[in-house]
Length: 188
Image (cartoon, rainbow, N blue to C red; front, side, top):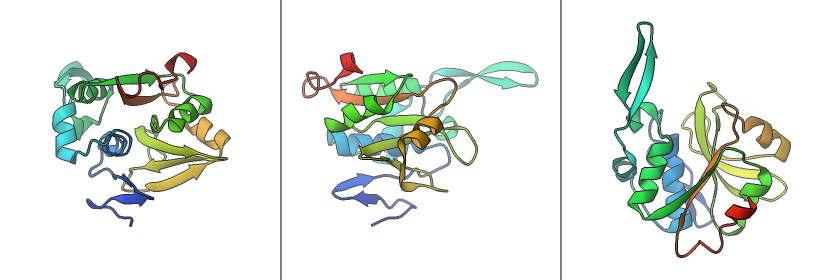
């Protein structure tokens, strides 16, 4: 089954959630990760409520910088939101700005699908995808309503596209008890 507008994408027995609005790619991949990797089912509203921080960001205007409250629906998901959702569910979080194919392969091998931040192909803004398999090609779910779904790219294509603001950023959340000895953080 595939679909948008609240419908899920099925991959074998896993469910992948598309973003439900323009800035909600992080919510889509966050829900996908939590459901498939940690057995935590959430609605979009629950994810946003649990991840919303209310932290302030600087918005640049013609008249100079102003502070505004970050809002997931308007501004997307950023690092403090990932920290808060992990904390809410008593999970540890691993974030790495220097990602490699080898690093994400090690996490997939233990059942944790890396959430990758890279430029969105349609406008170049930051966009989250989730990598679920690497087997000759990098296979991932793109939650975009415009051009999303299950995709695959060869290693070089994926690696070259995975560069935003000087980083190849990815993250995972994990259960401190269940996964601690399995997380190859020291070898990443």
